[in-house]
Image (cartoon, rainbow, N blue to C red; front, top):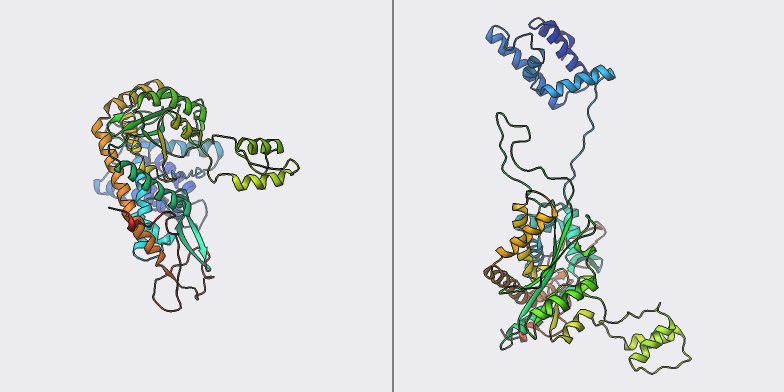
Length: 498
């Protein structure tokens, strides 16, 4: 738009209106001669043109000339507050400038437990099809199957969190689940399967901790827009910034419902962080002794995850940095013969030969003393704990009923939510987990066979892509079989009775 154009416009408007429009466009659009106009400036020009064409068709002013700001708002489609700020900036600083744009950071993608289990199954499907999963293939698959909304980096971090690693073998990189995770999953499935097959099976207790913040609320709600409403809409609740105080809850249940008298709640000392930073082994063990063990049947099976406060060793760990006196004490306690003339490194070599591969856990020993057995979930498999479904139900109730955003009211809402959890809810959650266990069990042997039969070509150059290399399976003589997963450390699944 040139000065001549403004002179033409000026013939149909009063001088005050002309000065407003000229000042606005001169500062916002014509800061530099020859600079291309952005899409917003082009839209404004078209709006001004349409406004004057409507005045021409009407044969007079649409808005009285005395109402300068209203005419400018009608012509440009810009709010009065924006025009006022631009004019103030021009008067105070002698020029206008574009406000700094603050890019809204996207929240990190955090799939729930069941989406995580679905992502793991998606990876397994690749192996069933005898196709190696690459990050790009996985990203496309999980977007279709699970509705994953993250990018490659988010998926990469999630895969590591699920216990997968990008393994290199024969100059080839491929995605594989960590061997110890696979072995522990197989061991858990076999253990819980044998327990359920026992005649008159013992009661299975599922325990877990969770937390809820004082400012927990739904992300969206219905708002009224239209005449007489603010630009942001009418209705809803004003939520304070931040998460607020945190209520931590420790509880347990069975397929028949929560364990009566087992609930333990307290408010976190810090407003930031999750419950893992507030819980400790002493608190957890005291809860077991005082609230859980007295309220569960004798000989119960207690299922829990591997949180640090669940997994404290029954005795102090011995390592190469331990003192010589501590090493001698350990050898004496375990009735192991040694020579008093040996040095600390020599003593530790003896300890390593007698040291058990896995340390006994204090919680496991504590449960055994009270006549119960602890069964630990495999790492990264919280979807095998039905109480996670119950927590999701409880938290949804709190979010949809929280209107005061005070920790005392959140505590009350949490208690109300627990009352709304029925034995049927618990039974459905346990049945859902049983279905997942059965599917994992049926797929385990077949998956291992599929991975064993994956054929990876070794005579192609893999240096063209250091991050990922896609492979195809063939039966050509130059290809060799590579086992991406070891066979289960126990015995073959085919030998198990259905």
